[in-house]
Length: 394
Image (tube, rainbow, N blue to C red; front, side, top):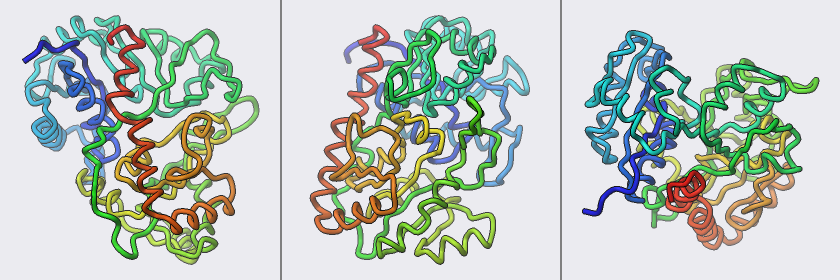
């Protein structure tokens, strides 16, 4: 076998938060890097107590974490190359095949450590590396914190050798927040395309679907220059609640409506709903849900929309890879790709109605275009390869 090109550590949180969306996000980086010929390791090194999605609770018990990570490692080719360090118990303790000594050797020796979603707070061991790379999936927040002069954020970002962001308009005139000397490199979610490929068309009666957590409160809302930018997707779903009724067909949302009145309002406007809990635990059920859908209809967070970030959903990219057309809220991403045929953007309910009619008029064509967009813009070989090129590891 040819020698691996580079030794790369993926720092994620799919043990700390082992739900399907988080798992797939990290797996695409791990497998994408492997397929480019790199020697890939997966590490979680955190003081945060993990979440158990079966028991619906935070717990210091790492039994579930160990089970999930071991299964993922066996399935996706990183067995023997992972560790979970529960720093809330001990700096020295690790779960998995790698000891603390081996983890620290990786930190010293690796050509890059990808801090996915900025999931890892900096500790004395991680700072053994000068090759930390920040990958931001939620654009706007960190840039506002810097503009607001938040020292902890400035210090945190400054310890990374490169900053990547899903906000592909950041640093351009379309994005209003000053960057204060930080260089943000545009990227997007990589997708290992064959993991989502399906030749089966959706069944008769399949709906436009999406998967969303509507229970988030205001803790992640952010203030900037006298305005509040909202984290939760619920206000945006409320704005477009009548979209399926106007389009003349049912949409479906995998979510937990916490309030009866809220559920009634949506169900009365031709929304179906299913529980997201089983597919959150079983990541292949999540995959199957995407593949069995007619397409995706979803909104974006107010933060992404009003700041014109150019953000695009990692989940929506998986719908495209499965050949499922996507109708999603405009964030400025159409400067680069999509907007019509296979991937539609909307700013009004009328835009949604137009998109639904177009897809229904020639579903096969829009399915093919959706797949081609995924291949052109989200193929892990291209996305991850471009990232590595820009940090000198091409």
